[in-house]
Length: 130
Image 1: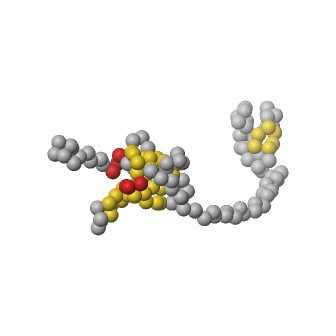
Image 2 (image 1 turned 90 degrees about the horizontal axis):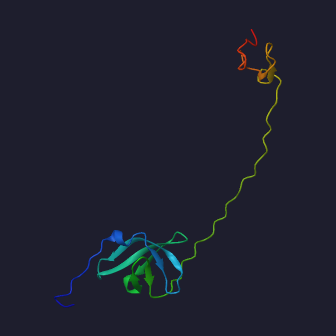
Image 3 (image 1 turned 90 degrees about the vertical axis):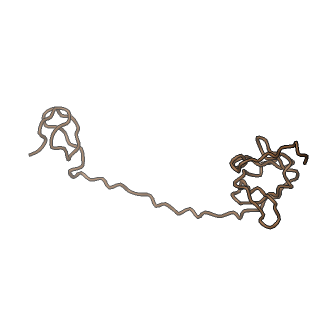
């Protein structure tokens, strides 16, 4: 690099959330973080795949970063084991019907149908029971 050429530094937030596309145009996932190799001064993108697994893409495998991260090669995604969900059987519920105080009654004054627990008619206001 010449002395007139200026280095460009980008914050991690510029990468996080970008979609990662391989050379075939397949969506791999989105950038979760930027990883740094402590001993070798190397970088990698931590990508969360469509299946929810985390993978690391070495910086050397990146072709360009603009609106998306474009890779130089195809990526074989790790297989996530399928989980089977056991659906419990549901027993139908029966709703008890009773002719007790919760059943409908007729207002003695206006003959409107009202709930059996009502002390007063909501339509005319008359007392329904003593």
